[in-house]
Length: 409
Image 1 (tube, helix red, strand yellow):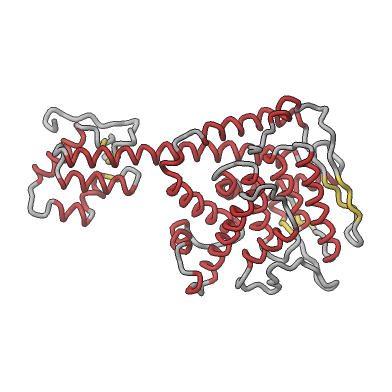
Image 2 (cartoon, rainbow, N blue to C red; image 1 turned 180 degrees about the vertical axis):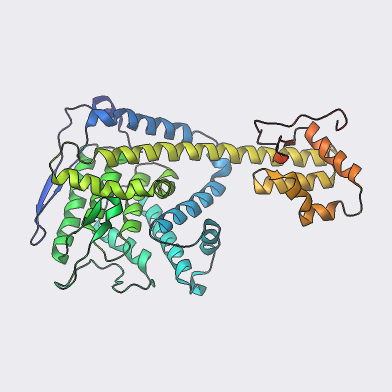
């Protein structure tokens, strides 16, 4: 497993790393240069932090919660990448769409979600193949999956953009660094995609870590902008595939949520790096590489936190089941705990008491019984009540626990 930060490169990362560049002459766009464009010494620490975070993550109890974590990551990342490109579904609606029968889906927004998931499935499949490498066929296959059955004036799934002379494609806007005119001529675009893949092969041969290769390919892919529509979604899946093939787990797709959270920076950096290169500034791609590495570190750490939370929930579920079996709690109390567990977050006590399931539990019982049940759960620390009267499941300890009075205990 590559796991991104090659050990040999880690020990030799210095200003001695040769610049690996490729200049391509096109027919109509002019010269296009692929380059590393970052200061090697400035990324060493960030790379090490990403690797350290991932090593901690993969030795955590992933196997216990792998299915749940994967489902959550898919929903969150599909929601993220779709929303970046104008998708309107909420995260809950995205989750519902993902379990829909593709043959029965007619709504465009649901189709967009299922298309992204199909691209994710292809990405995960190829990333597991020994010796897999990036190809134009893979890129066009991703585009075909992402754009199939989506209405667009020029929707041509899997086909490279070739602008007629009467129509000019622009990318970007004034709010994010300005508009950019990418290559317009189909033959130029095809040549640049081939060159991008060849340049990436050069990076692989030079042991450039995947955590740097992936964002650089993403950056240049978006500058080439080879399709009429769907370029952002395709670019993010390409990036994720390169990271997955290097051994990263879950984070490659989860990174889409980081991009959504920092969407203005994300969009602006494409122009910032392009303009820096046009002005022949040193390290023109540094800002995007830094942004990506920080995103990887934060994403992996968030995943680690989520694994810890899911494991805590599993232990809590086992604890409350055992308490019921041992008659330490009654069926009513177990129902309260199960409802809090299912939600995985605190609920206001007033909200709990107004819930239909809670009302039905105590329909024929008095307030004294209700209070006694809750107080017993608090004594056992299976629930916590905070000073704002929010009820917390026992696997989460709030900072402001409300002390029990003598009367309550």
